[in-house]
Amino acid sequence: MEYVTSAQVAQLQSEGKKLLVQYTADWCSPCKALTPRLSNLSNKYSDITFVKVNVDENMDASLDMGIRSVPTVMIFDGNKLVDRSQGVQSDTYYKEVLNKL
Image 1 (cartoon, rainbow, N blue to C red):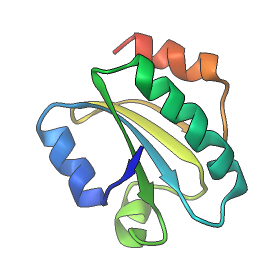
Image 2: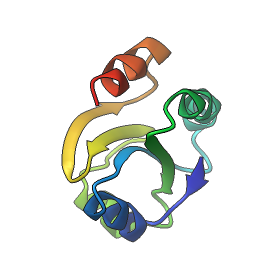
Image 3: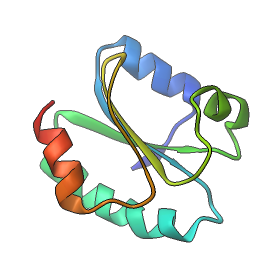
């Protein structure tokens, strides 16, 4: 999973991409635990783009998105928000949402 800016997320959305966006921070231990799990899932969902946004480097845009805690995972189908979760969820949870895209 690569780091992108909030502007890059908006660009991917405008292109109609299916996205899983992990809002994260370098100091966040749960984020560090979640990232490899989401990376593994990205190998199974080649039609979905998995990216990370560092909230400390994208503070204004993250606040505009309502990000109040990390990790927050948002799943989009283009501009449509399909799911939003805070904290670390089970792999099954993410799979169930991704399978509906």
